[in-house]
Length: 146
Image (cartoon, rainbow, N blue to C red; front, side, top):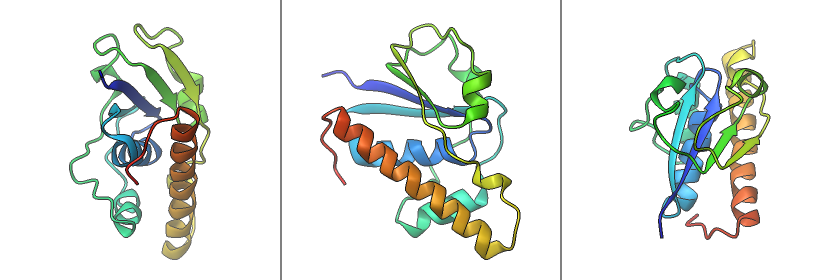
C-alpha cells in the first residue's frame, strides 16, 4: 500500500504545523508521509520543542520549511491548514491535492505573559492538536500506534 502524503500548513511552520506533523508521524507513520511548511518560514519556536519533549516527542529531526519547497513539486493527498491566516492566504489552487481541510488552532506564539502562562498556552494548543489528530485518524479508520 502506498503511503498517503499529508502537508500541514500554517503561517510560520514554527508551532502548530510542527506539532501536527509530529503527532501524525508518531500515531500513523506507516500509513502516511507527513510534511509541514509555513507561508512565512520561521525557526521552530523553543516553546514548541519544550512542550513536545514533555510528552516524549523529540522534534530535533524536524526543520521549518517554506511552502515554496513543496508548491507544485510534491503531490499531496491531504493539505491541512492549521491556522486561519494560512487558510486565508494559502494558494486556492494547489496542483495534486486531493483533499483540503482546515483545522483552526490559536497561535500560542502570539500569547503574551509570563513564562509559565506561555507554556500553559502552548500545552493547551498541543493537547488540542493531539486530540484532533486522534479524532481524524479514527474517522479515517486508520490504525494508530499510540
